[in-house]
Amino acid sequence: MAEASPKVIVIPAKPEAVKEDAARHQLRVAAYCRVSTDDEEQLTSYEAQKTYYTDKIMKNPQWTMAGIFADEGITGTSARKRPEFLRMIRKCRQKKIDLVLVKSISRFARNTVDCLNYIRVLKSLGIAVIFEKENINTLESDSEMLITMMGAFAQAESESMSANIRWGKRQAMREGKASIHFNTFYGYERGEDGKPQIIEEQAEVVRGIFDRFLSGQNLRLIKEWLEGEGILTAAGKSEWTAGTIRNILTNEKYCGDVLMQKTFVADCIEKKTVRNIGQLPMYLIQDNHEGIISRETFHAAQAELTRRNAGKAPSKKQAPTGRSCYSAKYALSERLVCGECGSLHRRCVWTHHGQHRVVWRCISRIDYGTKYCKNSPTVDEKPLQEAILNAINSVMSSKKELVEQISDAMKMELIPITGETASVGDIDRLIVEQEQKFQEMFEEVRNNQDFMKRAEEFKAINAELARLKARRTNLLEAQQRNSALNWRIDEAIDLLNTGASALAEWDESVVRQLVEEVRVVSKEKIIVTLSGGIKVEQTMEL
Image (cartoon, rainbow, N blue to C red):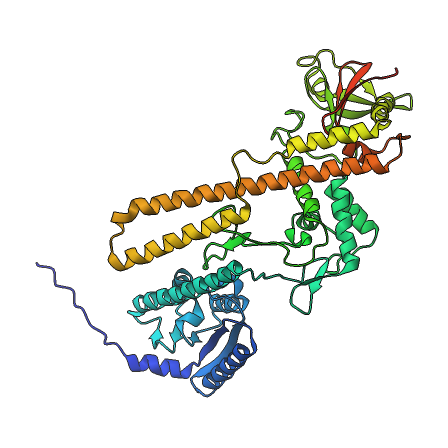
């Protein structure tokens, strides 16, 4: 017997039943509104949107209010920076909202990926988003294609607006218009002409920071001094951080200059700030305002920072990365060198039967025994310091000759760069000429569509621009090095001219300024190298 075919009964759809069910249960409706800036005009628009959606929801008998979510003065390219938007999404996940009203796609998000992701999340929850301007309901079948197109247009609009803003800012930089944030600018306030005006009380603190740093103190000791004196930060806090102090030491504004475009935003969507290490031009305005310190002092601080950061660790065993930690407590920590292996010495305190003995030992001997350094002596601190003082005092008696020797050494170091006759200004003018030439050629090519015919010319201009920028960088670095060297040697000469004829006691800061290196030849003999390269052989009393 043949099997009977299954009987299929079609139950017709009843759209009217769905409408009746929806009518019996009010939809919980929320609205999201956003304004792009926080000026007075936009805030008025923000309030108007809230009023509009409140009336719209409350006047519909099939709707009930689920909340008005509004972000003011917040970016539309990133949902992470819109707290009210994220709160609305959380309520949607908690099934407390059935429908979301938005004025337009650009109000919802200007990032196409974010826009689609959140719409898909809400759609999976059965929550519709209605965009009034575009007349789109996200639960309808063809909505995603339209949203993708509209979202892409909104993102393109945001990118175009960002590009226009960047162009305007860079044009202002080229014209020498400096933009300075005074809220966290320690030592200055906005003057009547809009330029920085010195706050003398804070300026003294800035000078103290630079002086202490250049005299050998590290950031920790400067922090302790500031907090010990009860000095407040720009934000009015009593606690200073090493980062804040470092920012002061590296801020060119304290010598009256302004360097612009040190950082830039690479992508208006991600809004990630990138340090400019050559990707874009920088713009330096010299003598923009009255400086708290001299340019020579500032350059000397930069050279000192570089020297400390570039220091190599005396022992790979203690510092596998090879980097050293600058020691500000003892001048000899970075000046006392083993005459046999060239390693630095480390200060050690030995205790025997309650008696303390301070000595300096070769770090290689401490870490590896006699494997690499076999005969390096252990040197007691007191006779070592006395021998160094005797070496300094032996030349202090003939200050005039010593000053002349240091000055001669300085002149030798400050010889201009070989083959470089142009100034930074001359190079800048050549760079501008090449950039203008490039722009003119580009306009011609864009009109005539013959780029390939002139490709070699474009390559030549780019190569010349790269060469000019390299020359400019080398010249600025040389000027900074010379300025820093000039400052250090001037400080040593000033100390010799104004100091006593002999040093009666050990002073860490004086030793830092006058002594370049102390080499331990044996247990009885050292060679002291003073600023300017003068060497003095000195015996130690045992």
